[in-house]
Image (tube, rainbow over all chains, first blue to last red; front, side, top):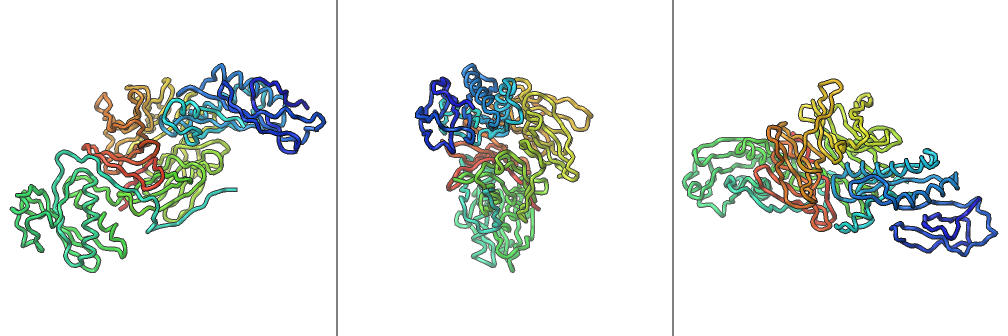
Length: 162
Length: 414
């Protein structure tokens, strides 16, 4: 089984956890694309067997106001997510769509769903089986930034993959 | 495991009680004198205070107590109408208490005559309810509209946990219907106001529940692996319109509550949600993104395969519509520049009337008499409830702690 290459440039977090005691998964970074990632430490022990390890492909995809289409930055991130999923065929992910607080709650719930569906469709087109994906929305109900300004709004318009 | 439990609290629940403040009344309110009720001083004081608050809150009344008047007759025969005319009082209310029951009379000062006599039978320890009934009688006699003091409001609070709460229309007598660690949205009443439906995320995904207010019993409306949201009851109580996501997109369905049959109402690749029924149940209005921005559409249920008809054209965001109870128009959320306001449109007019002035107004709900709209506002980061009457009076209902949102007004409870 292949494992994470340390020079994985898009920093899609593929997080090795669980039984792997010699690995430190700590470094949390936010790169230029605003993709929140967790990068595995490079202090890996070459002799570990990875068969029983839990593997996650975590990423966050951001959207424009009232939009559900994937931006070119998102596509770069999603390409990495698709690769990770294709390399780990047991992996299942939840795609949770979110909206900013502007507009009505039910419309925002539907908007979040469409965002999650857009991500789902990309992954399916890139070889990920539909039954490995759970698509849902929290609308504007679970913001991660609480200001009433574009900076906060842009962080809340997202699909969380994990 | 399910982190959720039900609480059955009926009275005396002290929790984040709403505090009412009137921010703006109408220009020319009815001036009403309320005299003490004879027979029970303590109960009279309680009734007077609640009745005055109810009438003042409507924004259409200005009330006067004994201490502000020239004379305080203790019986009908002792009334000197001129004493009230001089003070420009329009109406006088006086009555008596006997054995917990209240008899009250309303006098029209300009006509020097009695226009109403009513008896309200008391229930032990429910003076508040009694005062609401009396307020509604006075309101109806003077305005010609049914009063709404004895109705209730459902809303969601967030204060570490999410709560679904019901309270009297004056914000008192709160009762928690549901407490959850996960969001609760879109609460609505059944037409008989005995049950509520709402969306809860307690299972990790939006699902619609129906809950009996009296017993606390509840059930999920459809067993289905996809998200379900945005419930709205048909006026006859037999159907629930819902938004289902099983087609990979928000579509509106009608659920027959008796046999659980589902009928698909919309079929479009854009968002269709926020359905609501016309007062007689012949039409369903909903928000659709099919024109490229959220707009309100209507489907005529009397015609087979009726096509959705767009009904809003002004601005690029018109959503969450509800019909006025007299079916003369609709109330909805309208974006004007970058501000979200509550707006109204009469069917015989081709323009929108904005009703509110702040920037993040949402979730309008109309009182059963059609005269008051309660809605959610943001004051800084805190959510609270506000109201506006069609005559222009405004009020706020901030909670003493926590954020409050998504108000839903009950029907008449009598």
